[in-house]
Image (cartoon, rainbow, N blue to C red; front, top):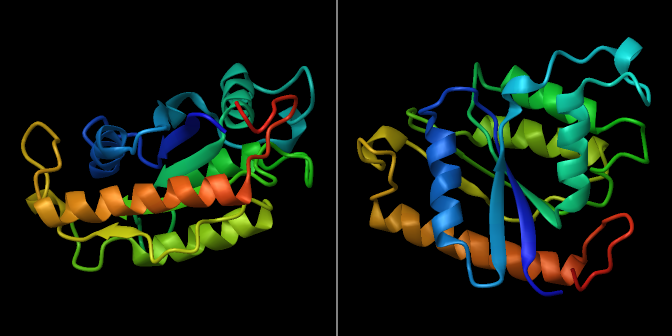
Length: 195
């Protein structure tokens, strides 16, 4: 495999979301041989099984599913809302998880991280998200993950990650993710493992 192409997903619609900032930091700190391309979930409507058929799915849903298919792996930055995964992120995964056992998520390596202004970061949301991804057959990086607590203190006014310890943690996490993706392989229709 040459460059690992990662689809980055921030589970927040806020323009200045801490998790968008975290995803931007990951793009900057990605190791050599890894690229991270963000996907904006803003256009994805609420899941409706009546529209979940070929030729009927909303265009933004089809675009999301294609982006997952074309990626080698997923990097998800989740906020935590009321001890759980934000609805916008869960909704997008619900769309992408269909049809069961043949979705673009099946076999797609994924890693989870998150930032929050609270004292424990996004630990509970990350645990929920692992269960959701398990249901889609997406293997999740077995790592304690990156949980950035009190994140407003770690980003500057421009959204740059300035906390050195957090930058080091994120860089190490991304290196481990890249090595793990190379070990577990890549699930992509019609594309070889060498990209």
